[in-house]
Image (cartoon, rainbow, N blue to C red; front, side, top):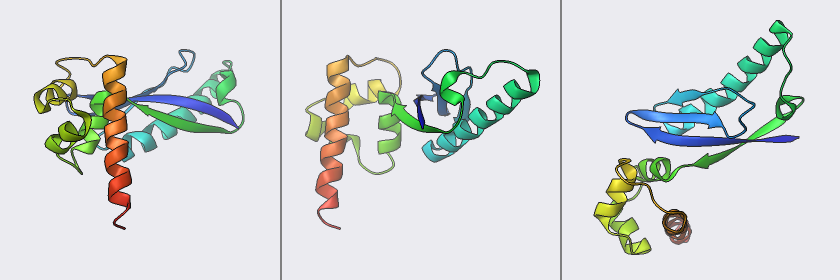
Length: 134
């Protein structure tokens, strides 16, 4: 089974998704993370059908069965996390100021890779702690 890496970002009013591989020209949007994930999977199927109908070559990754693997931008991670935790809690966990997290979430600033990793690690740590009470 082929793996299709999908990049998901948050733009002013919704999530957007696209395959990372440049040879797959397909995009989708959605108001929720779940919706954009579903929409990109459907868009990929529609894309393959269209290529077949036109007699165009199908990118290798889309031949046969494939599985999407989603990569969220820092903005998308923060937007999604806003549904479940406060920025204050994330700031406390990561050591990154709330205002800085807001700048990242709003696209006013772009975090360096090490800051992205701190945010991801902070979210994962909060999830692990919460899972202990279930």
